[in-house]
Length: 213
Image (cartoon, rainbow, N blue to C red; front, side, top):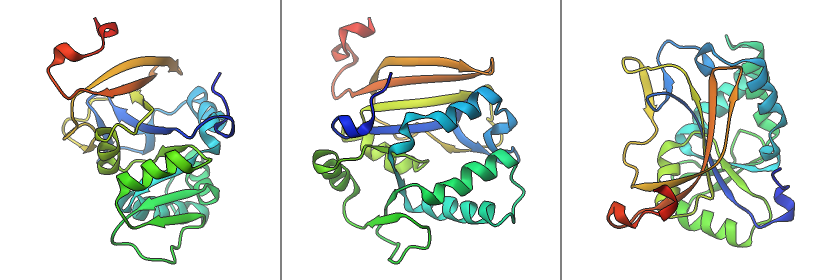
């Protein structure tokens, strides 16, 4: 059982949904690649990380705020489940790291951090009271991983290969990491959740933790 973030030091969770070949989205495919099912959707509603603050970069902020507004206004082609998920993001506390955005921000409950994102997140973890989880933001997540700030790295892998149409490659530009699995499960007989504690590898692979074999 995962404790409430109010009862422990703040942590940072990097959270992605991906195709089997490591893409975050794909051109011409519906949301969740059309493979969301009742078990997965229920898990999304019940996640204990619902009390976390969302952390995102400027590009994701622009995209998601626009999608959230369209979903809330009923002016979209999203499914009912997508509309509920997207419109609900307006009420969630959010921090966007950007040197190009300016206040006031249109998306409700969003704070702007305009300085160095890695330093800002490190300070949030040191002095804050709420844990953080990312929303998309591939470049930001890559920087936070490289800085060793990520406590949990979680993927929900959808059983599709999108080599021709995939967009937003997740792992390009990453450093080497050792990953210690701390959780896994299957949703709806086809979606696979895997969750790890990441460790940056700064030397030869022989320096990886002994538990990796």
